[in-house]
Image 1 (cartoon, rainbow, N blue to C red):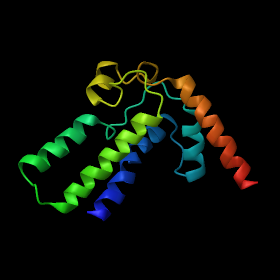
Image 2: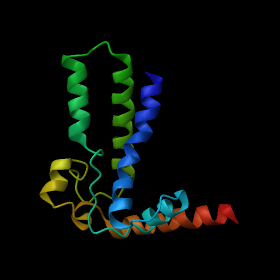
Image 3: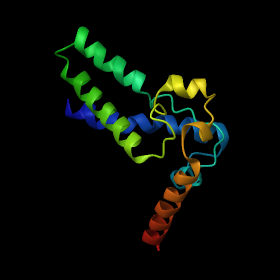
Image 4: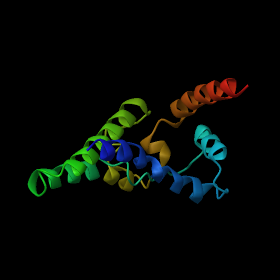
Length: 135
């Protein structure tokens, strides 16, 4: 259960790499990935795994079909925690921003899903903090 929680709490962010490769097409370098996301320079953002629908499906599956599967229970907890923390800390324009159907309806346009100006201000602070730590 703990391993499922740990792994899926972090692996949800793998969908950020889709945006990185789709819009930037750089070779995969950790420092470059961070720089791209700190700039938050996307017209569209997909984040297919960041979806309350998927979390709901996972919990319903557990409830109706697999109540005693502790690994799946840990995965559901880690996944849900990740989504809730992202939802609380990111600059969502709408309470529906973490619903995949809402993003599809808005054609994945970042300016209709997230407050991009707020995200850029936050990421500037993070970037300054990281660069100061490196020096």
